[in-house]
Amino acid sequence: MDYGETEEVQNVHAAIQREKREPRVGLEPLSIWLIVVYGLAIFFGGAYLGRFSGNFSGDSLDPYAGEQMAKKSAGPGQPGGEQTAQLSPAERGKKIFMANCATCHQANGLGVAGQYPPLAGSEFTTGGSRRPAMIVLKGLQGPVKVKGQQFGTAVMQPWDKTLTDQKIADVLTYERSDWGNNASPVTPEQIAALRKELASHPESFTEKDILAVPDEDLPGGGAPPGAPPSGSPPAQTPGAQPPKP
Image (cartoon, rainbow, N blue to C red; front, top):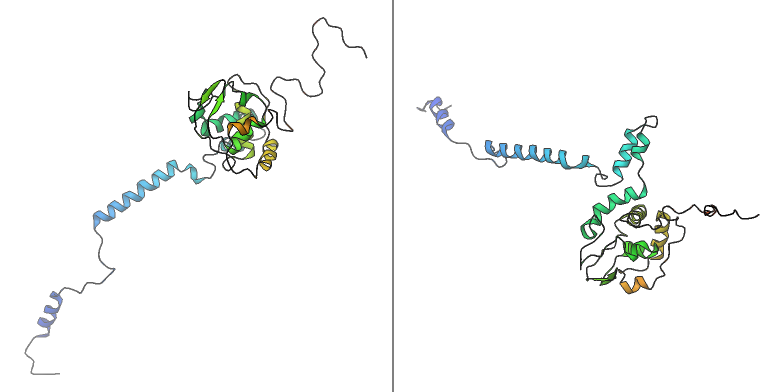
């Protein structure tokens, strides 16, 4: 200890305390306004996701999700639950059509003049199921004539990568049974077989390609709505004599 010092220790320490501390990286205080802005952003972002995320479910845009939820909510013993849950193929197909096809072909099936051909009364829709199934699976490009009218070069996209066999069968069944159409329904098994048949065809079809295919139903299909079931005796004319054995 140097007893010759004249500076008071308290004065020396006071001078040191008045000095500002050296800045240290990573420990700077945040502005209160920045904290408020971040907090509001997190709050409103969470509220938006909670409202419009479809419960973070992959089935939120699936037209079959409502049917599945109805089956779960209506137990087997609850009256009316089965009728609410079960939808016909045409009813399921309508939901798929409205979500994917109505933009071009319109909800009434009349299409857009000069651009998108109609499905109501179309020879492609009401004929055999092979031609429309080919168009839906692989798409259609180039001009096409429907009901005597020429439509432009608008391209219909292929749906083989987007829709399942069940959904394609349902939407075709709907198109072939609505707007006054009365053609045979389409089954998923038919679409699955046609998908394998067209696996080596990478491009969309043209009108010439479609017309080169026989206008026939896909193998394994059902009868049109209202047709007598297979194996049933033919209807007899009133007053006619029954056939002799």
